[in-house]
Length: 466
Ligand SMILES: *Cc1c(COP(=O)(O)O)cnc(C)c1O
Image (cartoon, rainbow, N blue to C red):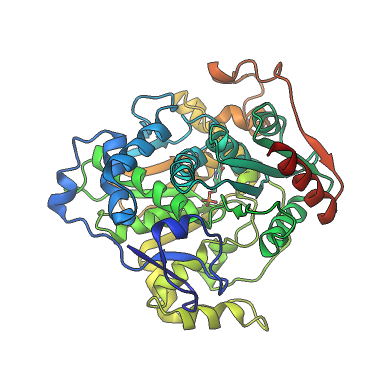
């Protein structure tokens, strides 16, 4: 399988090179040249597979000859072994024909483990084979950092540096990162905000001469194709449990960077019968405005009770645009590089998007109310991100007959603030494997908002380690 840039001017790459590269050289994101297709009969035959077996069936065509079947099976088995539910992604019913897909049984209690456990194992395999050692550098506002650290902590050929804004991530999120005391894990608390962290990572990727000889940076953010690919699997898995391919199944997805829901779109393009994909946003609603009013103006970021969806521009939206514009890289480039006006989609592209996607915005007040109402109705506790997905699904769903699956992107214990507002009397314990999180030793380095000081710090540690 070959991978092409959404901007159409970078060389096409193999699967392995795509995974080990960040942005394409033309500034675009990599996409598979063609999508694997599964017929109704193919999908029907997947009904008996467990999560890992299904993951192999879905992922293998994207990998092609780049990995042996045996190696790919092993990567998948190792990636999903640490999950604490034997179904890996279990379904729970919350209303008539409405289901929650629990994606929080991985090590860090958020769905990002699905992609980052896989990516860590994939890196480890590829780097061992090449005899190469790389540096993972990433910025996080919360969930990505801990999932990336958990994914890479056991990788012998990776040193991982995660930058988070000092004092601006939650206690749980910080401790999930800083209590991993592995020799190859480095947490930097930057005296700045998330954008400062991200800009520092971008600048470092653009000019990597600060690294010791022979080292290079590798990306773990959601522009990495392997993350999207791994997320396609659970759409198939949930739909199969609910009667696909004989039944059509719809999904509602709490959305930030558009990676998760884009994986659902790809599942549909590969043959899974999905009629409706609901983009659920919080007050940072650029995607909702884009779809409903073709309004893509940037507004200042609002800090909400669902911080993992506090995003101004969704980087993976470009991958959808590539498809909506007939996979025409020149058209995507023109659309995204005209900075004189906000993005404006053609009527045709917008109409295409609306055939598949619906959208809805949920503010903090309503989020808290939904958590409270759902708990009263069924005793089920939603995390704030999931509550937004559930509310959006109920507001815009088109069919009562087709099952609606709401993706639960995090465990409620990870976001106690919203839950405390909804249910002041209820305490939510952390799951057993994290009960001692508050007692664990932390290790982090607080650094000033200075690119050269961060890079000097990294270079010194990397040289000392080897
Ligand atoms: C990352 C994240 C999201 C948003 O997912 P995207 O792929 O960025 O759209 C939603 N909920 C939680 C809990 C997350 O960590």
